[in-house]
Amino acid sequence: MAAKLANSLAEIKDGTTTERTSDRELLITRTFKCPAHLVFKAWTTPELLKRWWAPESFGIKLVGCEVDARTGGRYRFLFDVPGQTEPFAFFGKYLEVTPPERLVWTNEEGDDGSVTTLTLVEKDGKTHLVLRDLYPSKDALDAALASESTGAYPEQFVQLDLVLASAE
Amino acid sequence: MVQYQSQFDAPFAALSDATRRGVLEQLVQSDASITQLADRFGMTLTGMKKHVSVLEHAGLVATRKVGRVRTCRLGPRTLADEAAWIERYRQLWANRFNALDTIVEELIEQENADGRETRK
Image (cartoon, rainbow over all chains, first blue to last red; front, side, top):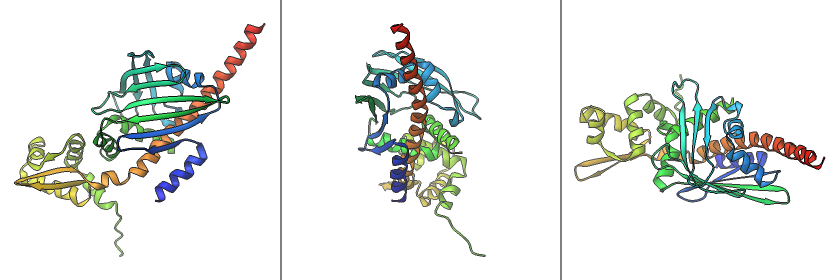
């Protein structure tokens, strides 16, 4: 209960909401004060991605960013994590690229990776963003949630690092 | 002296051992019997039973015996903090989006500047 309340208060403060909408899905929302094509551009341009996907406050750097933003094209992000000799690689394929409203990609760095769908809806000069992270099964999402305590999934490991670094 | 026992003592103690952390990583991938885990970590059955029992006590592993085989899977505690995990996940995205705000502001200015250029 306390965690849920804290979550709601934080959502009001910075406008980003997160919810587990089903056994297999996590949903994130946010509104941006700009047209959709600019958010889409920031999401598909390596030079821009490098500046916001891992902002400086995270303490880790996005050192490599290859993006072939076409349906069937691939992406590859490389993160430099302090204390790790090898960079972490995150990669996958774009299943759908429809500027400026829809981007769908796979996350292939681990088994049972999710498929992420970005939807942008523009209204009155503002853009409502919805991000859906759909896992292949309930077990896969549960494992992703549980893995934080075991560090088994590099992506969650990095996410935890990111959050801890940004909380400092 | 008053002994303060935190609800986190058992899981922390359970996670202090490399083999037990390895067992959890294994169970994230798939459920396994104690025999399979003992083989995987090159241990005796008795040794692995002790590790599993520590993990079970901490709520990190749940076991179920069917016939002569005891199967281990991730326990309730690893899933109990879902709300806390989701909040950290939200913070990750909130931080990204705050940085993205700065980028789109620049892009808006750039578009406005380009617009002025073309009108000249």
